[in-house]
Image 1 (cartoon, rainbow, N blue to C red):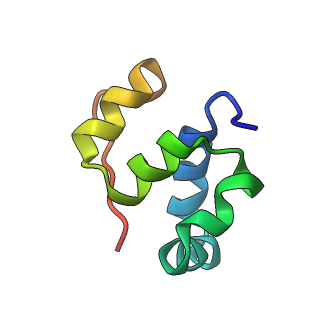
Image 2 (cartoon, rainbow, N blue to C red; image 1 turned 45 degrees about the vertical axis):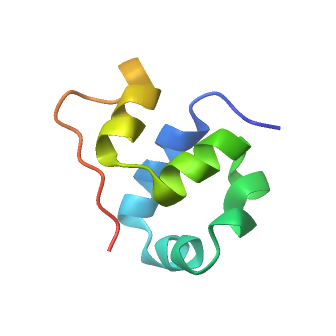
Length: 70
């Protein structure tokens, strides 16, 4: 079941946890239920643009936030 702010929470975790980031890069859908993402959020994070993600997050995204996964 999706959790409020699950996308924002996961983005923070991905930015500081290289093992989690690697797991996400290898199989994004494997983390979906574990972190409580909705299908829409998974699709957005796995393939959306930074602008789309910021728009989706709305007030949960600081004005200067960046989205970068390498």
